[in-house]
Length: 397
Image (cartoon, rainbow, N blue to C red; front, side):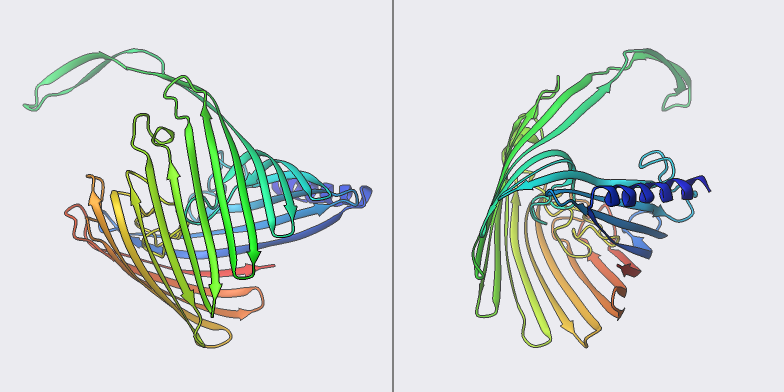
């Protein structure tokens, strides 16, 4: 009962502020329930249910100010307790993954708070940061200067320890030693510039460059990261090209600089939309989890290789095709091949490939059913072939 009262009071406060300040408040959101099955080819298969409800709050004032936030309700796996992930995301699993405010003066938009920081599915997508941002827009140009803040606090205490156990012959032994610890604390400041330009309906460019100033005691992971992509449309064809770079020290002190890039083509022929992607990663570069398909990347419950580039230098090609069977029903199939220069961590071997697909049915406006399944073949010795599937019911409002 206390939970309901707290949530109701919060929304009443929003409504009250809107009335006093003559603000316009819009509420929207989405909700889903899913049944997931995942057999990773090692250990037992896992079957789970999960669900969540999300509500977006967008408020604007007559003076050009605005507030944006998203509240999530009971986002978690069924059967793990009424609070699901209590503690990590709030005592009652009512929490916000972003909330920020800002104001606009002419072509300038100034904002601060916990913000979504997406650039592209390849480089950086569904992430958040404590950010201050100055955004300038003029026609097809958007130029943003950003500052992100993160504070590390971690320390290990040096302690003498005694451990009793058995040796390989079964004899009782005592081991006396010391926990070797280290202190890791300090600030990380990320300064960035984003440039977006829409030259015409047929061509656009996007560039993001950041400098990471890592002031922690050890290790110092300062350096530069960046990505640039270009989109082109002509004769019904759409092409996307992206190239990314990460200075090695930003990932691991003394590591090689990292590179990765891809190109994508898609077009629509009647009810069929084919898509082809080819790309590479080098020297440890990994893509964002969002980039991919259903078994490799994609950030979905069927995913078994979470990021393209994991396991070593990678060359990949993926072909997809969407078939719009009717106004409400569509099907999509994927076939993906990867060649990995195994660095010893490629669990699914040097030549994994994915066969996967989905079916989506739009029951009505804002209501849909979705089914996805995928198969990942492996030439590795560590795991067998993998199979994953899930079904989802979703509502948007």
